[in-house]
Length: 197
Length: 328
Figure 1 (cartoon, each protein chain N blue to C red):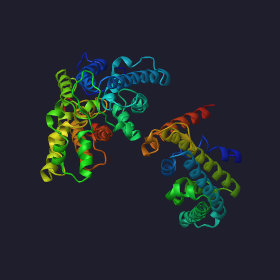
Figure 2 (cartoon, one colour):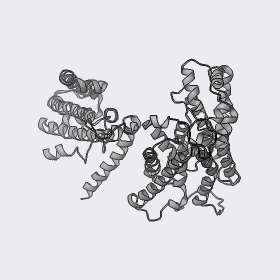
Figure 3 (cartoon, rainbow over the protein chains, first blue to last red):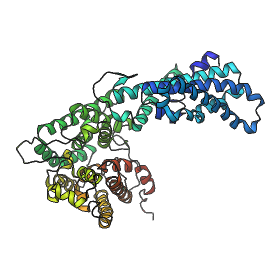
Figure 4 (cartoon, each protein chain N blue to C red):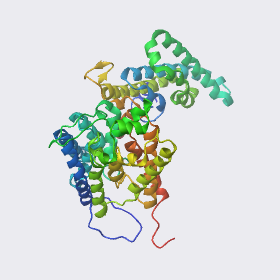
């Protein structure tokens, strides 16, 4: 797989949310609006790229028996870094996302890429892989956030185009599941079409 | 029906079809529709018309252009039944576009996503209603004095269940609330308590139910087990604390109890196939409804209870499958 393929595979073919169905908890919980989805995606992207690079660098010297605790410590370090940075520079978004920032530590996409890719590949390749998966995750969260915001609040990125309320259900949990389901159908349809061609 | 049904022998040929059964359900709903139109006037008629028309149109558009099926399912009346039931579940003041959204969710999400009639897990009309209840609480719990067609003396306010829920939160007792608001059982049985169209007249709905039983369109076990569970559960609570809990008769006559237990819980597609399964299904609905009414934050829990129990139907069908003929 070339580096370009590593970066682009996350959009459709190996989209972590809609095709691989990983990281459902932040996906469902933080996509109440487009801006929330986008920030959550970018936060995860940041951790993914850095932890992938660090893990690919230290993987040869980590004993096999303790590799998972070591990876978690590495990931947690970057999440703490991110948390402090967000608290300092984007306090508004930090307050909205709340608990879901520290929870990136246990996001299965991050540990999954460390286990499946970073510990067997070079630093640059791992960075590309992290970037690709992270961009795919950001894309899906933003799309989900946009759809839910349009239907639920009648606005896009905070710009309101209807008066009054939208369909409140889409801002709440049931709407998250509904939108996720229909977007999965759409993405899998696109993915299967690309495969056929 | 185009689907091949596989069941253990013996098989008998019957002249019933989906269309004839659904037509009977429409006929059975006529008294309730008439009562609601008489009490609530042309606005109710508008809600009914929008609901039924949008269900029919959406069903046609989705089967024809999205599922690309040639044989259309419009003639089997099932979309019309969904439309009528949805309309009976809404306040007559609901704006037409909210009704349309409800119909779109009912047919699009509740029915067609699963593959159309016979494949849906949840009752489509209730999916639409609960979606609207969560999305537009202001429209869905807004009751206005009715503008009736023939000057029938109708008084409308909040639903009896809503009055009790609010009153209890403010520290009043049940008997005091019933007396203060002039709630009596005769009124609930015949008409003229506030509520959505399908809540106002228990008698009109029961006439339809009896019609369905006589025509053998449905069997009574699900409905009866819901009623029995509601009666037993509310009797226990009411005997323990009559100030805090409403009595069995009140719970059987108010809210969506009659409409839900007679017409929604007994839907063929979303109820268990065996009698035993149906009884368990009914007990579950009755119990969950009472728990929501007594302890939940919503005043009424019938639609939630039916949807929750709909989800257990595949399991109930597995546990209580039909015995093979000739085997113990």
